[in-house]
Image 1 (cartoon, protein in one colour):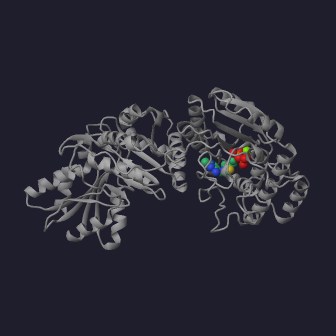
Image 2 (cartoon, protein in one colour):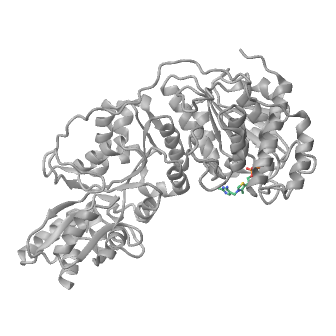
Image 3 (spheres, helix red, strand yellow):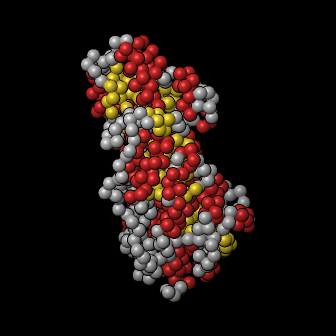
Length: 611
Ligand SMILES: Cc1ncc(C[n+]2csc(CCOP(=O)(O)OP(=O)(O)O)c2C)c(N)n1
Ligand SMILES: [Mg+2]
């Protein structure tokens, strides 16, 4: 037990304020006043309360800290400088090109687990981390610092709800209730009882405190884990606290001080500032490390050619098969697990499964949190509902998160449920995510093999699965390297190359058979890897068919397979004719709909003939 020195913490808080001001003044931009309001909380957490190895931010049993209000990045950097991790002069390189002290935190920095700054996402990640700690029987806590303006985001309440449901008493939220947002006061200003009531209703233990009273902060933090609820500190603070001409003033959000103002502010803070260097930081407990090794291999597949299996079902089967040999694999779903078939995993491995209920932004954030703790998280729902979490997925890309998304029920081929359930924009979204991999299998074998690779590789992966059953067309030992494509039909004299994936691949094969009977040869390619695209295979085939390609996809014509092929191969002179869903979809039988939208075998035959 390290004795708490209140005066020292007050001094460190002022030192953090000074760094926040000097670094943003040097950068000429940033959010010094947002740092000042939270400085007392951060000083208390980092210099005596949190248990962590400041030399090894990745240590698996370190307490985690998520700066959900990421614009206060200079404050976070100041804490990691005062604890000795960052050389203090480095702080003056804030926001400079080539320096990792970016405007908002990113995991380029070893003490940042996930990128923040798109407000409203940190608490979801914290829920994932708190669940991971529980699963791994580790005793680290997860602390999430939020702004009062920030908690207007619905995703915050999705996370708050799940934390309450799962009684995450290893999760601590701190709301920096400084009354102000960016352009004006928050809706509730300093009427912070409103926040207290809300968190209480979501199943949290609530402590309303003076966020500048270190004694009080220390006191309430000592109550962590005493009951079975997550804890929130609703901290009444002042934006710009500690500097007379900034404190509680509107109009200072996101503004650095000029040199004279900075000097004036520092003159006020300096006399009572203290260095954190050398202040003892409580060590984390030494507990057994969680399993972090990838399996040497996977149990074999056992499909028969022609078996009718939906790719969504093969996904569930695959998850169980890889989960058997890989303890890192965890699954979560948004109350669709009987449709996505994640329920197979949920039944087999309940401890490694998290029902996130119907809250897709939080679903993705929770998965990102698990990924940041070394798990291989597979999150599933209807593909179209992942588009609700577009921003979380985008930020996962920036975080270089290890995130596996499986979206089912894609395209018009879901049939009767109608347009609101059909994913027709998902490939466009997922392809645009930085560093993403987009996979679109057409049969059970390719699905299973692609899920294996998703588990083994790092990064954001999206698997697009279909509702209808389709025949197994590959043998159990076929390999599907990411970035490849399969040439399924090819003969000398073929007139055109048809590139398809998922349900339309089967239509392309039917079309090829029909055309063959009429003496017209076409090459058929399975583009199971949409990003990276199997460019080499497609180009080689196209060059043998007069550089003419037809793409067929159960997706809108914008941003999907056709655009991927055209975008990659136009420089090679390949002409791409797109068959895709155009116009407003509606309910109907899958066969009716793929015929109506011109992506079935008959439409392919017609297009080939027209060329
Ligand atoms: C999702 C999202 N919307 C808008 C912004 C722009 N923005 C950055 S900070 C901010 C105000 C935040 O207010 P608050 O959460 O109270 O933080 P404070 O600076 O007061 O601590 C806004 C609107 C953002 N970063 N993310
Ligand atoms: Mg605020």
